[in-house]
Image (cartoon, rainbow, N blue to C red):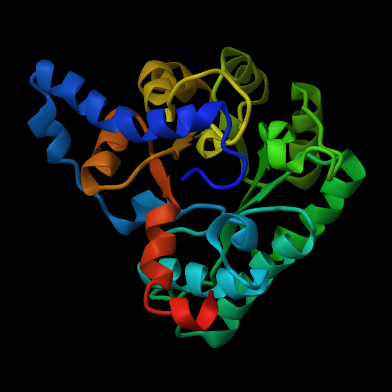
Length: 278
């Protein structure tokens, strides 16, 4: 399931999941499948997805219960962390608190360096967005703007989100001097935005099929546009229907630098604790 708010009868969610195997078939036809399968996948190539809405989308009784176990397990596996934003604001605060707690426990991660995360903020008006940056900055390895989330069906009429312009994104980046991610890159207009902003990271995503956008998969968008996007950023991240080691290798083969995974990690984290937490 794509979670609450899947649009177009969850078409893009289904396409996301199916497209990775089709790309492998393309590689096989070109005699490149064995090369693809030889790609080494290390934990630093993977990040857990920026998930919020544990009550709405996963079935939790209490939103707070989700964040720490999810991020803790990812950190202990050596994966990078991503933290999402949501409505109400407590969803972002729970993510911040979880990263803070990982640093306080000291032994919750295999890494000796402070635990930091990539935080993805919704495209609020400037004043509110800047307030959020101050909340996350002490714990942020990257800060990203979720450019497509103004169009999430479930957030309409709840909060005031904006379709950000290149000028607004450049002003944000210049003011805060952070390693900047543009998340939700999935259309030709988004590519033009990337040309103008040149963020450190381009994050290809259609929000798991939960935004009203063109019909298509993140896998196909990556395969088609990665060479062009690489001209304007230092890294490409991608999510959407990535479920297996072969899916990860396929994404890396077609140009991704890091792969973002959510649902499998949620399942792996909470199966044993389901009775206590859900």
